[in-house]
Length: 480
Image (cartoon, rainbow, N blue to C red; front, top):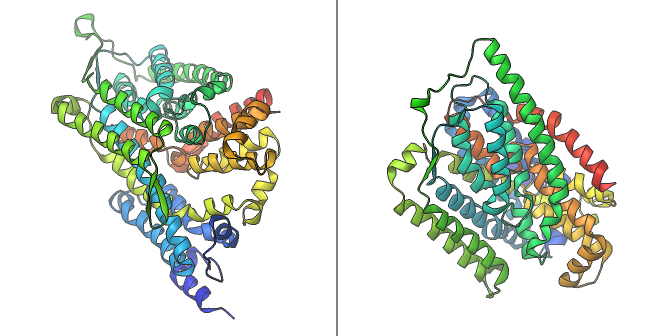
């Protein structure tokens, strides 16, 4: 016999999900996570499949209706979830939007807006050498201005440099690998998981310990890119798709316009750093603690973006082909993704008591942490995934110890585990389009420029063939 609550869930979710639980609860996060069945993650699977399949089989429909589809999947989860669990569910929904989603979008919007006001002009010929140099520059600056900032600053110049070439998809794919993900490994400014670690007492410059692993990955990928780009260019020339030679009289010197936006970029960096150093207390929104320093950070970030819009000439943004489509796509899709990942994150937070406890129980060695953190970060939000496995490591090694002492001891005594967690969260964000927000933005900008980017699964084909062997090598070199 189905009880009333179970019947309501099945009725609400239809084939997309089933009952989330059989009784209400007012317990803490772990209690909620331990009562959720594994199929409560079906709406999340639904939105992933929508992102993967609709652009492939119904591109026009997806283009016009993807915000509605994202909202629909969010509602498929939120309505029965809240009706079944009451306040604990409301708390989880408010928490993920107030603490995670809204600050996430504000940071992306600020970096997108400010970087979009910096125009790189001049003649850059899209050769394997120049493309590799641009990739290297983007990779090096991503740790300091964020993967979003570096991606938005350089993707358009890279596309313009290769405008005359027929085959460009591989260039954008490697750009996503290097600039939009792996380049953000060295500081908390580079990628959200590392920022979350900083907020949980991991020292700011500790992430420099990821330099050996990052260097190996970057060098291999740059060498692969140069070789692949050279082969593809030779093929295009052989088939008659030659890159036009620019006459000396037509060449334009390299120059930057809108460089005052670098001040606003520094303001964004300062705001992020401030939120990790100051502790100003909190305000409570229906039980969700929102830190005052984080509110101040968001105000600073919004101010930097608005100042960039006000002070940057329209001509610069037009020359940069700046528009809001990429950030709107990220905002709509991740609004649905953040809602539907709530059950999965709650089950992970419940540890061995949750329906995903088999994952937590499987994590023992550094290479386990690297691969499981990375695999989940490819599809879930990598920041809370990082935090989940950081807490798993702390609980395994230092149960009952305060966070400040446990983090310090983890770094001093078992630092390889934190390195593995950090590398997995940052590196494997490159595995899918949803692994990191800049991936979506870069893909959107490339498609606006007429580049036919691969589908969700098509992109994963690149990552499986190119990235996974590199990650296996990293495992053998550093984590075994």
